[in-house]
Image (cartoon, rainbow, N blue to C red; front, side, top):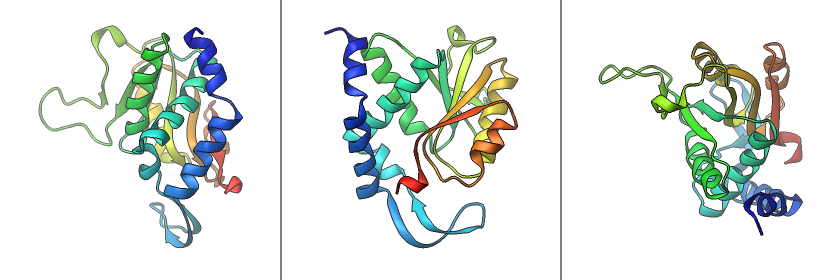
Length: 193
């Protein structure tokens, strides 16, 4: 069985149903939580336990890989820290399946030493200029934090038409990204939990 067929078979309803269960088991809580925006919510998603789990990392990477490949992405990048574990898993998985997708992350602020880069992980051969790039995040709420990665990628000449996230909290990210010409493609929505 070739790699492309294996991905199609693996990335079906069952693998995403299993990923959903892992998120429920490891990353989802109900209660009263203050979000980074200062808003309060009854739903909380801490995706690190899911994306640092071996099976969770694989399934999250597979979900992102399928969407990135279908969109024809050269690279997938995201803002530190939420996207970084998924991006590492995605790079390794894409290579193993014979369709390498470059990954990178965007620092919230450049380091004050060394090359002082904002975009990290790209080699000279991975120039983003004129190439299709998808911005990824573990959880989207308003979309504004992820948009920092969009701006950095666009500043590097990338074409950004899509964003992906494991969970969209359904609190404005879809509309915010759309207002900037970007379609948000979540793997799951908060209403599914």
